[in-house]
Image (cartoon, rainbow, N blue to C red):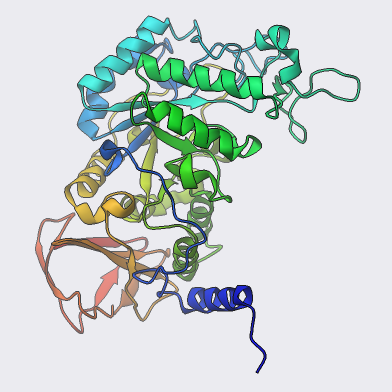
Length: 459
């Protein structure tokens, strides 16, 4: 009998597992294209990340004004503050009145509109005193037209057919010009620039468009930076797990974000979410970190607000990103029911107030921190699918670590649903997290959920 090639067998087996749904969405994860060698910083094990938009955070848009919010963010439960780029912004071909944060005019300085490097250092030190960590948005793919590197090292840039600097091909980013990452000198410079900020106190980086740079560079950078102190690295990318083998702790779960929007808008259903996680863990190892989010600066400014994209489903999806296998993100103003698309190239301050979501996000953060089953990567437990008789509407799973178990039921539809879960070996006495009441999960139990309703049970 002719042997089937191993490569074909693997494809067939993966397809069967994904089609089956719950096998890879759970304990069986033998087939892995790679094993991440990253050792995550201990302080990231149950962390929640928060994206800081300094320009829009206050009426003055300064570091000093933001500094006053640090105690509030600590009380909310935030662990990692990701600052959108704080570097000076280029002037030639600037977009809008103030330009894009991502048009970097100097990698070793701060935007004078925000304040001084001393002001930023005070934020770093105060955040550390409060037990929080700082990561800095880093833009390695391109610079502004007036970055000093254009004069000192013009050979570090891509040129067009006439020998002139050029914006990144295939984009409308006319305010920036493309760097040439084949240049060894550029790579050495970037290592030194990253070290500068880590020596200042920064705890890591969110890297913009890393897929246009060599992943081997980030592996080298990670080694060099970890010599100073353990750093945390977030890649703005999804699609090449090679970046999270040795260089990055976490990448973006863009597909899940778009899937949540599609379900909220009636274009997909809970079955698609089950298939998503089945594929997810056929690809990513258990120690992988994935960035889960309802919004971020790109989505808010260009796609729309959470309300406009998700409507009444946002509490259910917020519960999902805080209980699923990933690290949840909160964007500036999200905790205050931000109800506008923040302008990107102009001043457009956030109006700060408490709202119905403020306490809810606080509760979700406590839920994550107090339950080891929900911690990040393999600090937490695997997601195990719970079957129900309404698979197209109900998405349900549990996660378990040691003596801790968290059971999650989500109605991912705009209609009321009655359903029966198959509890298997997880029946028992629980606490309903959001009501604090005791609850029994026994064979034959049934639930009726309102549209976009949800329950989280703790054991």
